[in-house]
Length: 433
Image (tube, rainbow, N blue to C red; front, side):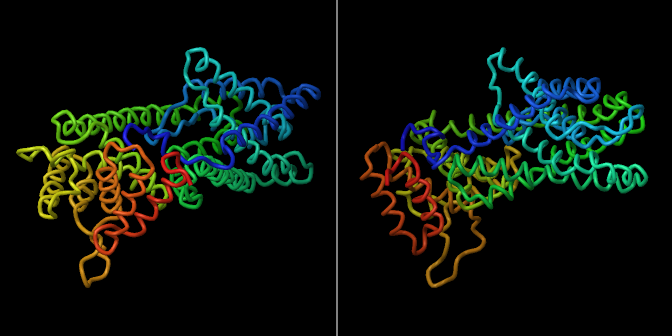
């Protein structure tokens, strides 16, 4: 396993979810643009204004702390266009579902051009997901506006129109979550339901601000006109700046922890890349077991820090293999590592995970020890696996390491974690089936 990268523990899948999403969005976009070109734009001034706002939003997109890429302003503007029912001077907003998709997709692609010209990733998958989400919301809402009877009823009952707008935008939440979880499941061959739960939870961050702004845009446009757009967008723009600063702080924190974790390698206490390998494989197992994003983040920090306590040793352990030490010595290293984590102002959960990594998952003649976090059990198993494999690159060495872990499942190593490790490795390029 030495020298492997994160990509090497990603599992091959029967299909590429990202390619499927991009292909579906591409077909939808071509169809929408072709029909709109044939029929012409309805309310062209409104369409161009929203298209420009969507493009600007795509230009100023941001990367969230969990590496998700979002375009809050662009997506909010696209949702607002999909939910637009009334125009101040023109009455009904009569653009169709396909025109909504055409304006959205063209705006997003134009906004992606500066990123492509600058050599940055175009994030086609993210654009494709946003196009499909907007299409879903438009497909739910626009038929009510385009039907004469329904429009007359909504026009006569503004509160009902507001309720329908709110209900329609809620379609974006599960649809975006299903698409994102499906792509991640295809990449990692991970549990779809656990990934879906994480995506649904993630909505309550920047997603809630996007959805609420998407609702406010058509309501404000109904009363004020297109001049309402900058007024409604400004709060979301400020929130985006705050998220960008938060993301930079989080990235700096991770870089600091990674630099601290390398102190054991520089000092000759562990093999080069040990902390990185343990962290990558631990995260793969965490996803396999369905840990939430928050717990995965704590697992990442703790895995990077798991060997820092070795700096207290007078003489380095041969190869840095703590699996060869007596239980008391492993506990002392774990305790010292937890103290370092606390002094570095890391979350208390991280310190507890580091401190409990040396504990067996159960004691002789007793039930499973619930005080040992699952994250600690994961680190214990992965650390032992990497120590047992060492610098070997043969399949036999890896299988022997797994067998050694299975022999310790009575007390030391949690069977569900060992089983998850075996599944992750069997689906990866590390151990062929």
